[in-house]
Image (cartoon, rainbow, N blue to C red; front, top):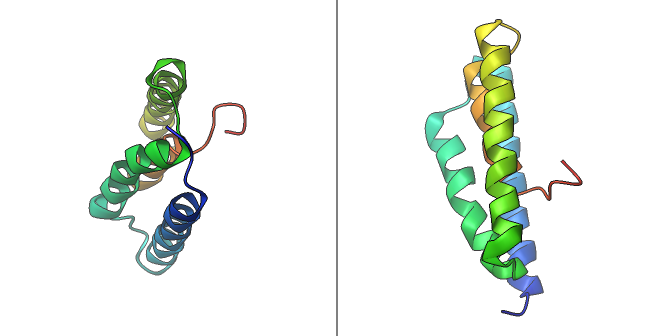
Length: 102
């Protein structure tokens, strides 16, 4: 599948808006809503399709990175070094960012 730059940039713009909403919510209420984290994670497969990622190994690497980030963030949450919303947000964001850039 060929990449669609307009759709890709549109999805990245929506991600930027969602991240700004997360930042504002965290700053004002010390809370990042699960719905927002879920929406960010749910948008990742659309982004993968728009970018033309192959199921193997591209998408598998994204899922592996997200699993690794979840494990590290869960450990930091257990150590009280990271909030739960932050851990979920970083995991959802790991689905969007290429492993080398993350």
